Each structure stands twice: as structure tokens, then as C-alpha cells.
Image 1 (cartoon, one colour):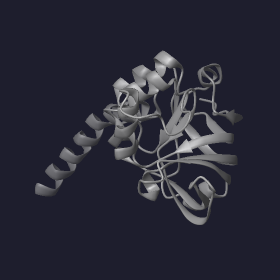
Image 2 (image 1 turned 135 degrees about the vertical axis):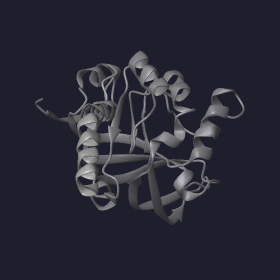
Image 3 (image 1 turned 120 degrees about the vertical axis):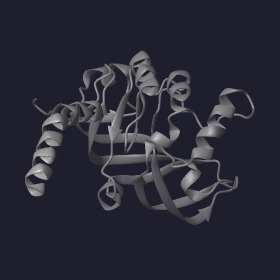
Length: 215
């Protein structure tokens, strides 16, 4: 399989998302939104239920499971903190599995990501709206942070720093991997299939080794 590398402007559109294939590499320019908070995702569901307004425009955006830590440098006239972002780093997306299908479909998200992938219900939602899951290098904070150019907006400053919604301007962020594409193809599933194919031979070899040692 030939791996293609794309450089694309974000937020990603449905049309752009559907051009990408599982295994492709991607360099990101433009705007992304990040958060590492399960309480944040639960609060977003509350917004969809009408409990409070959305903290920023999230429709047709790209939301990633990236923890961020920022240093507050000043406070604007309306009380919003002005932040100097120190780092971003991926968190495990599977924690958000129960909430992501609704967020993907109702917010029409065309790119999500983090590390570890998402479950089949999320994959089905991604196919419906035209959305990809991007895998970020775990522990790659130094690499990822170099791509951040500016903090544009912060949502829910009353939450812990990692839980806030932070809209960033990035340039040259990546490379990241299209781990699940909008057509339902998944590099995680491909890896699992390869393991299952090799498992009988591995077990047979282990059994033979035990028998030879017992003789």
C-alpha cells in the first residue's frame, strides 16, 4: 500500500475528509480545537440538550483529544484570559466512545483524533458525516507543540486547564496518521486482523517449544 502525505487546511471539510484513506499521512495548517476532558464532552452533550449555550462555534470544526497547558499572561477587558500555550499532547480517545457519535453527527465534525482510536459506533457516525480520525504520536508533545502558532479562543475558563476548549492556529502540525477514514477503513482493525492471522502459527510454535522442553 502506498502511503500518501497531504498538507491540508483546517477545519477539514467533508469533501476533503472523503479524499483521505486509512494510512495516509497529514500535515495540518489552519484552526483546530483541542480538549482532554471527559467532563468537557459531557458538558457539550448538555449543550446539545439545551442546558447551556455552546462556548464557541463548533459546527463543522475539527476537535482533537489533545491536552493543553497554557500560562495566563493577561486578562482581556471581558474577563477572558490571554494564554501562552506551553504544550499539547494527545490523550486516549476511547474514553469518549459513548459520547462521540452524537457529537460527530450533530456538530458535523469532519476531523477528530487523539490516540487509541474510536469504536464501531463512532466509525459509523464518521461514515455518515464524512469524518476522519487522526492518530497523534503519543508522548510527542515537543513535536506537536512546535506546530502551534497562536491561541485564538478559550471556552469554559471555569474548568481545569486540560479540560477547557481551546481553539488554536497551527502551521505544519504533524505528521499525523489517518487511522480511521470516512469510508470505515481502520488501521487499528487492519493490525488486529494481521494478529489474528498469525495467532494460530504463534500458538502452535509455543506448544511445540513447550513439548520439546518437557522431553
